[in-house]
Image (cartoon, rainbow, N blue to C red; front, side, top):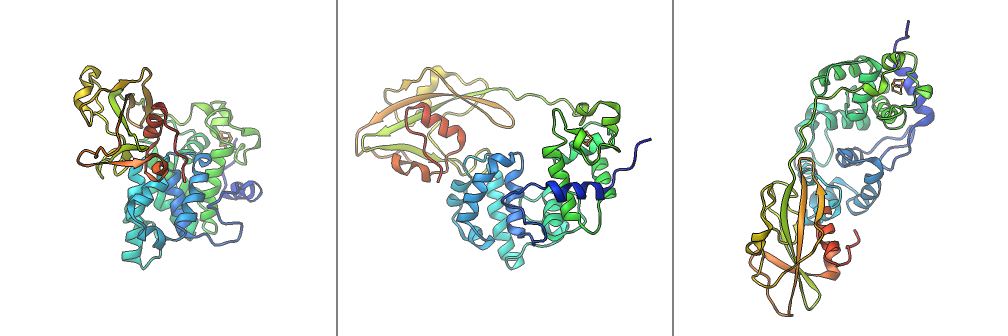
Length: 354
Ligand code: SF4
């Protein structure tokens, strides 16, 4: 008969093997709620390795919730550029402003009050309440779902299994160290109970783990089949001016890549016809079509952009709603990854992130 999973075994493991992360307080230190919250927003759908350099730069630029709230939104979007999922950056900024306006600059310390803030869903509210304030809250992300479905051999498919997983986490939660427990579960999922080849031999829950006992670890979590998005196509127009400037515009504030900068493009559609691309160009002139399109995958669809280039003499003014940005100042524009690829494909140096 297998033994019962106990929080104390996981915590003993965590005390020896906890990851040192830039946003994590040292053992015995009080975590800064602002840093915990910002890191959790950044880590949504992004890996720890990818977030680390952004997080350090972001904190150097906006060291407090006040600094973030008072920054212009273009500056926040620029610091975020490259992390993807830009609605998170907009919500992050709105949340910092709400904390200043409604909570006197201090993050509220309950799940319920945290959830009322922009961009904070069930997971983030649980994670911040547990990690920053040691509240007995469940923070269930993909790592935790994997560990729990394996530990208890939960065969129900995600996302339907979420309430049950949450229930199991709450039942295990130790009331003396809920913050450490939340982080320990995340670490276990990230370093031991990995999607492929989990290191069950050194797992603190190897005895009680039901999936391990049955040798079917990798069959969990079970997921409902996902529909792949349909590829969309479009044209991107890279127009350079003789004085070393490039034509850009800002995307609408709402929607995909909202508020980010881009070179002018056509609509992105599954049935886009490149033969009519000239009609979508920002200026009627001779455009050169580059042979190899830029490919990029968004959450819901893959995109293929064919790049057209052209040059204009010095003194040409930008069409309405657009601007010429000196190439030397390109790094200061909030260009998303797909646009960095377009600029690079056009033979212009990829701007270094500041
Ligand atoms: S024993 Fe293996 S499958 Fe079970 S929780 Fe530990 S690492 Fe995951």
